[in-house]
Length: 299
Image (cartoon, rainbow, N blue to C red):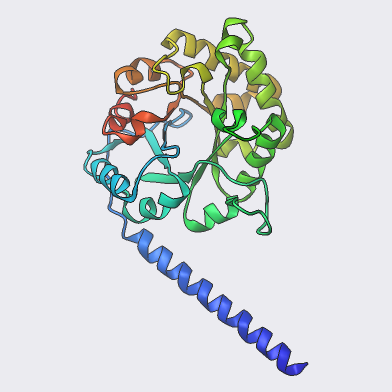
């Protein structure tokens, strides 16, 4: 029995050493990321800094990802009042964390609802993303809520994932939004409120400091259709009012609300000029040099 215990202890010690060495390698790699530059003045105290997130979805080869990283690394300074994050496919997170300029945060596009490691084949845990070096994760994107050749994720599941991610130390872009028929029926805020309610019940006020709400009208995602700045502002204002009534006025004043319906360089400036639009969650344009036109479109 003592021999078995010794073998088990030796195996455990070896596993720990391997983990320590892997951690050292990861930190060494991340420390070699190219330095970024900023310009202008940071957001004043009490003002919300803009958040421009890029969602690469299920796109990219090693070659194409390295190419767009090179474009971003040479794209010039990022305004000091803008925070930028790229949410890449999980297989490309390592490249981003080793080669992408260090003033662009890296995040996942989804995480499991599991709070611990275990028998969850195919899932990537929030704690694993954090351990790997990610700062952000998207939760509740409409493509996952709707499902693609699989059951979609309902409001309760999205809220649970949000809480798990926050508890793991990640920041979250929590996506909500209505379909075309819901917009036409005048139920946009009914839909958005239904998606927010389970999250409001689970989260503490302190949790909301690490949440950005990404309002993405489903009818405008990847279609080329975009809500007018006035339409988007109206919905963003309604979302902020809902948060004030159902969470707190302080959270409502501080929480960033991104717009995510086909924002690109050509329309970013007019959308970001609206008082309740605090950034964007960018799909197709985030795979192109045009992404930096969005970044530089912030007032």
